[in-house]
Image 1: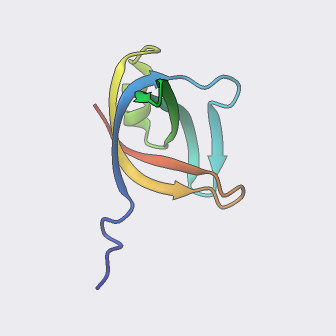
Image 2: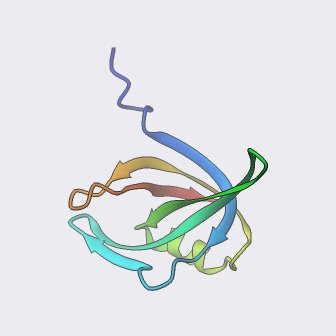
Image 3: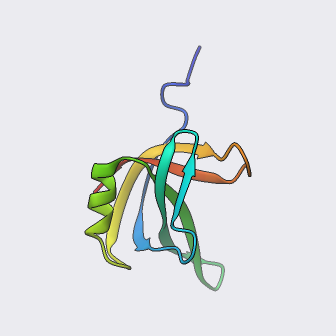
Length: 97
Protein backbone atom coordinates (compact mmCIF):
# COMPACT_ATOMS: atom_id res chain seq x y z
CA UNK A 1 0.00 0.00 0.00
CA UNK A 2 1.40 3.41 -0.97
CA UNK A 3 0.45 6.50 1.03
CA UNK A 4 2.74 8.98 -0.70
CA UNK A 5 -0.20 10.81 -2.28
CA UNK A 6 -1.47 12.15 1.04
CA UNK A 7 0.77 11.28 3.97
CA UNK A 8 2.62 14.61 4.01
CA UNK A 9 -0.49 16.75 3.48
CA UNK A 10 -1.12 19.34 6.17
CA UNK A 11 -3.72 21.98 6.91
CA UNK A 12 -2.86 24.48 9.61
CA UNK A 13 -4.68 27.50 10.95
CA UNK A 14 -3.60 30.34 13.19
CA UNK A 15 -2.31 33.89 12.99
CA UNK A 16 0.18 35.33 10.48
CA UNK A 17 3.63 35.98 11.93
CA UNK A 18 6.24 37.55 9.67
CA UNK A 19 9.79 36.37 10.36
CA UNK A 20 12.43 39.00 10.84
CA UNK A 21 15.70 38.83 8.92
CA UNK A 22 15.14 35.58 7.04
CA UNK A 23 11.95 36.05 5.10
CA UNK A 24 13.34 35.21 1.65
CA UNK A 25 15.46 32.40 0.33
CA UNK A 26 16.20 30.19 -2.62
CA UNK A 27 16.55 26.46 -3.12
CA UNK A 28 17.02 24.22 -6.13
CA UNK A 29 13.27 24.46 -6.70
CA UNK A 30 13.16 28.25 -6.78
CA UNK A 31 12.82 31.43 -4.74
CA UNK A 32 10.50 31.54 -1.76
CA UNK A 33 9.13 33.81 0.93
CA UNK A 34 8.69 32.34 4.36
CA UNK A 35 6.57 33.26 7.34
CA UNK A 36 5.11 31.43 10.31
CA UNK A 37 1.64 30.45 11.40
CA UNK A 38 1.38 31.26 15.11
CA UNK A 39 -0.80 28.94 17.15
CA UNK A 40 -1.69 29.71 20.77
CA UNK A 41 -3.07 26.84 22.81
CA UNK A 42 -3.80 26.18 26.44
CA UNK A 43 -0.97 24.25 28.05
CA UNK A 44 -0.30 23.04 31.57
CA UNK A 45 -1.00 26.17 33.59
CA UNK A 46 -0.57 28.64 30.76
CA UNK A 47 -0.51 29.26 27.06
CA UNK A 48 1.82 27.54 24.63
CA UNK A 49 2.80 29.46 21.51
CA UNK A 50 3.99 27.53 18.46
CA UNK A 51 5.38 29.03 15.26
CA UNK A 52 5.03 26.74 12.22
CA UNK A 53 7.27 27.83 9.34
CA UNK A 54 5.71 28.05 5.87
CA UNK A 55 7.53 28.57 2.57
CA UNK A 56 5.64 30.14 -0.34
CA UNK A 57 7.13 29.52 -3.79
CA UNK A 58 4.16 30.39 -6.03
CA UNK A 59 3.85 34.04 -7.17
CA UNK A 60 0.06 34.21 -6.83
CA UNK A 61 0.26 32.82 -3.29
CA UNK A 62 2.94 35.38 -2.46
CA UNK A 63 0.49 38.09 -3.53
CA UNK A 64 -2.19 36.62 -1.23
CA UNK A 65 0.31 36.56 1.62
CA UNK A 66 1.25 40.17 0.82
CA UNK A 67 -2.35 41.21 1.48
CA UNK A 68 -2.15 39.81 5.03
CA UNK A 69 -1.10 41.78 8.10
CA UNK A 70 0.73 40.54 11.19
CA UNK A 71 -1.81 38.75 13.38
CA UNK A 72 -4.41 38.16 10.66
CA UNK A 73 -6.19 34.81 10.65
CA UNK A 74 -4.79 32.39 8.08
CA UNK A 75 -5.34 28.82 6.89
CA UNK A 76 -2.54 27.15 4.96
CA UNK A 77 -2.69 23.86 3.11
CA UNK A 78 0.42 22.21 1.76
CA UNK A 79 2.93 19.45 2.33
CA UNK A 80 5.34 18.88 5.17
CA UNK A 81 8.90 19.00 3.86
CA UNK A 82 12.43 19.22 5.17
CA UNK A 83 15.28 21.32 3.86
CA UNK A 84 17.89 19.27 2.00
CA UNK A 85 20.69 21.36 3.50
CA UNK A 86 19.70 21.83 7.13
CA UNK A 87 16.97 19.25 7.60
CA UNK A 88 14.69 21.94 9.06
CA UNK A 89 10.99 21.06 8.71
CA UNK A 90 8.58 23.48 7.01
CA UNK A 91 5.22 23.52 5.25
CA UNK A 92 5.48 24.02 1.50
CA UNK A 93 2.44 26.18 0.80
CA UNK A 94 -0.15 24.97 -1.70
CA UNK A 95 -2.99 27.35 -0.76
CA UNK A 96 -3.72 30.29 1.52
CA UNK A 97 -7.13 31.31 2.84
